[in-house]
Length: 224
Image (tube, rainbow, N blue to C red):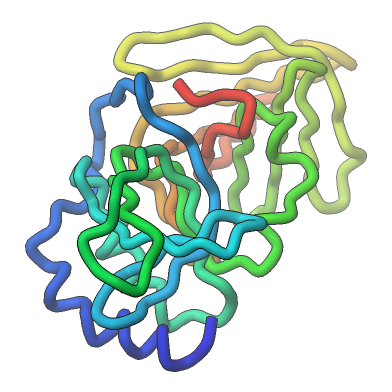
């Protein structure tokens, strides 16, 4: 992200203070009537603008769902890279000149500094992606199974079972290849301890009795 938009977002932070942050344990919101979109966030003329991936249009961001997207954007504005957001909402006619309309955000899946998120080749195929640090781990789940990646350990690609739990929680589990793997996911705001990226799910990975914690978000093939 260019320095000027970043500085502008930081300057706007006090204006966003009255906006509600993502709750520690947010209630699951219905996605009916909303469209899930990914794109880049920038600041211009005192507004936060959203440009969908692969498009040139810009939409003024209005946090109609009290997701905290304005505050989250301001907090990440000083970091290097393009500010990426994955949201659900709807588009409406704009109130101000200089943009192509208004984006009414109802749900925030994740927001992070990334120059490659818009071109992620795996995103559309995934149902869930979870990851953590110290030690690093990354788990990708899709209709074809789960893939668990850890440094110094052979990649584990196995089928899994999903179990829905109360309060929007769910788990993925497998006992294939002589290993027991469980991923427990909860609808709770989560901040990556290394990058500062914010996502809408917290995750706990258990591998053969070892417990690792991290964050998660829905992939492109899951919106509930």
